[in-house]
Image (tube, rainbow, N blue to C red; front, side, top):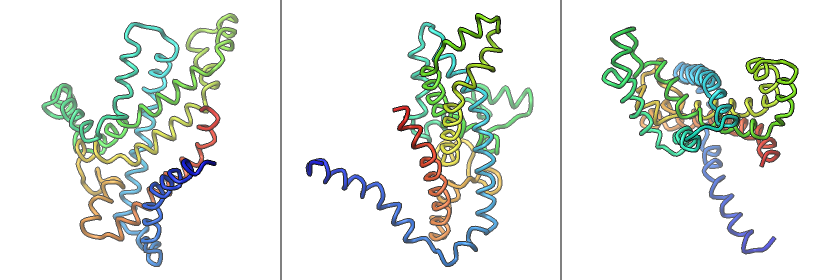
Length: 256
């Protein structure tokens, strides 16, 4: 390997891994079990897992049909729709939270109607956390599923249609099994993104312990009072992220 490539590659590796190594070095391993079982940590972890799971289910419910639409239906403005779907990937999360407030807040486009008609308030609630996480995580699912649909062999679907299967039957019995690995990978990525969401959550749902304070928000709060607690919380998120990325690595390499 040329030195001109080896040196910057090594520097890039050091740049990306050194902060993670610093986190591991500064972790209070002696008191780690005690800190992991602290009530605040368990509450934030439980809330994070529940909200991320619910957000992922919402992403599956809405994102899979959306990915199918983008992959299989040729309609005017499809490129624009795809661009809009992927906007949350590059949009600053805080801006996403502000946008959610402007739509679902009590004075928002839909929030006022929801409050008056159903008495439903979304900002600064656990439901608000789920919505914020789903907003930033859904593009990951849509991109993964759309890619799987574009790579799937359509001859099986055509054969099912020839044999008299309806569109819904073909979708549920043929298409979904074909793209199941892509759906699973997208769901895992969406779950991981939802678990680590911070900006949109704190803007739209706030930071209330036991109600909206997820793990990233707990890290932010702990930095002001207890650095070791922040390190422990960060370590948990790091372990989860590495496990997910390592599990999906082979699939990424295989589809690249």
